[in-house]
Every structure is written in C-alpha cells, then in structure tokens.
Image 1 (cartoon, helix red, strand yellow):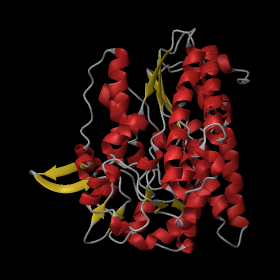
Image 2 (spheres, rainbow, N blue to C red):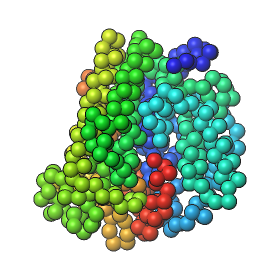
Image 3 (tube, rainbow, N blue to C red):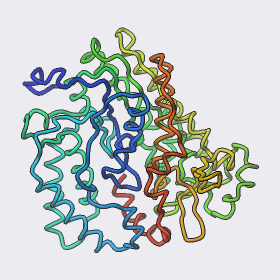
Image 4 (cartoon, rainbow, N blue to C red):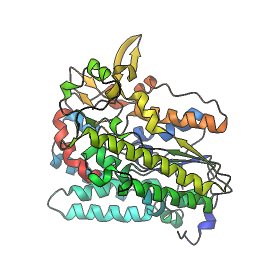
Length: 449
C-alpha cells in the first residue's frame, strides 16, 4: 500500500485513545437507515461511554437519503415517493459546504464495507462516486435502485472518511480506514468486519450455493482469512510501536439472525414451541424480509460451521502476524455470545425484558420484527431483521466491555440492556402497519447488499 506523499505531515495527528473501523455494524445502521440518533447508539459509542474513553464520533447533520422507519410509520410504500425524498436529500448532502473541522472521525466504520475496503476505499473516491450516481439518477426517467444504493453508500463513506471534503487538508481525501489508523496512531483499535463477505447475503436473501457450505470451498470465508492475515501484516508494519490493543469482533452465528426463521410464523412463535426446541435446529428456515428463500437445516448447520471456522482462522491469522510485536490481539467472541440472547431456539427465558414499575412493557427477542396495533415481536434487530436495535448494539458493546476488562485489568460496568429501550425510537414507537411496507423493503434490499 502506498500512502499519500505528505503522509508524515499527519503522523500522530490528534492521536486518539481509541479508533474504530469496519462495516455497518459499527456505523450504527438500523433498518437500512443511518442518522445522528443511530450513530449515537452504535456499539462503538456505547462501548466508549461504558469504559470512559473519549471518542469523536461522526455527528450527522441529516439522515442519509431516507429514514425507512419514519416511512414505515407514515405508510409510504411507493418508489415514486421514495425517489422524490432521495433526490432532495442527496442534493443537500452534495451541495453542503464542507467544514474544516473535524479533520477526522474516531469511528470511521463504513456501511457496506468488506475487508478490502479497509485498505482501499477512500473518501475522495466515495465523493466522486456519489456525484456520478446522483447525475445518473437525475438523467434517468426511472428510479434506478442500483444507482440509489451506490449514492447511499458513497455519501455515507465520504462523510465518514473525509468530513471536510478535502478542503482543510486535501490529503485526508486520499486515506482509507487503515491509512487513517496509520496516520493517527491510536492506542486501541476496534474492528468489526466480514459480514459482507457472505453472511449478510445468506441471512437477508438466503443466497448461497453448495460451495459456501464447506470452509474449504467457501470463497467468502477463505477471503476473510486471507484479508485477516493482510490486516495483521499492515498493523505490524505501520503501528507496531504505537498500537497497544486490537479488539477484533467475530461474526455472529448465522442461525441466530432474526431474518432466518421457519416459514410459517404461527408454527414457532409460541414460547412453548421454542422452549421445547432446546437449542436444536428447526426442520426448515426461510428469509422473512425480501423474497422468501428456503434454507434446509443441513445447510444452516453447515454454514454455522463455516462461519465458526472462518472466525477461528481469522483470529489465528492476525495473531500470527502480530506475534513479534507489542500489539495485543483481543478477540471479542460474538459467535458464542449471541447464544445467551437466542430466544428463537431456546424460548423467552433468553429474552430481554423491559419493565416499568415492575410491569412488563416489551419482551425483546431475536424473532423476526413484527408490529401491529395488537402485537409486537422481535426487537434485537430493526425492520430489516439484520442490523441491531439500540438494545442489540448494547449487547454487542457489552461483549466488547467484557473483553476490555479482561485485557486491560479494568472494571467498567456493563450496559443495562433494558435501559437502552429509552434511547431507541423504533422500539418505543414501532410502526403499527409494518407488514404492508415489506414489499417495498423487499424491493430495496437486494440493491443494498
């Protein structure tokens, strides 16, 4: 990797105690939506507040393109209405005068990022992509969802990676996530990456083939390990004498994803049915948002094992590259941790109960999201059944706190999961007619994967 020619001018600039890189799970995305309320409850922000580390998070001036949750409340179900909102919002983003401050964000995890993006995707490139996608949409007679998705990702990436639009230091537009780490030399680096190498497509679309069900032939899983080794090499070469801790989140167990559940809801929603399952696999799974795609228990078991192996091998690969450095690798085992919240396979004893004056308000589970005047279910994730709610992100942050306490001999308190309900607008005010919007979400989802 070739760093910008004036790289040393920023060496150690505003050196932070912690930085975070990765994908949408660290960005704070919920329901295919990102805005300031969501960035404020990302797992990175919750972790930093819990352990008492200062962190300059990205402060969003407006939502990026659309707020799917607000659309669900208002009952907007047409692409025509969505198109008008998107174009107006994009113009605001692209015409806004860049600010000279902040020069950097401490959390620069970008929604949609895969492993290679950590090394290669830069803010200046993202802004150029946004301008091109916006021009394409303006020139088209139809609402091109592919261009809209590129616009969403590129506007968000440009804002995160280069908040001043290159005006304060043109060099910042040339830095990827890892280039910024090498420039700023944080003491701790938080990493959450890898879902976009196959897990999100499996969980959201039920998309896989037989080669994906064996680690030896799964291209995505093997790419995770290859890139993990590359990450270790980069850190050893560029920050070996400055970085103290690398906190590396593993991928969750696929079967725990809320979007994967038996096709017939009534067959498994009852607590007694799920409790009787006692952790075994269902006889069949299906995606719940987007077009229904069946997944056999054999395939689910196999892919669970593929992800577990990818996690284990990625940790080994990073550790091997850092073995000769002072940097300490701290794995955060989300694959195992999700089990304590897997109500889908164990029943409501693993639900998170929100109470007021001793009375049950909501039971938060990893069942597929559903809401109506008469019922509410799910809540670990948002409307897309993939990206967590504030409570779901708090559960991730708690595992990071647990790893932090063990690695650094600290005694930071864990986040009260039910208390996070008060900071989650979706859970406090879920749409009363979510199901009719499912067709619109199903149309959008393939383009945002």
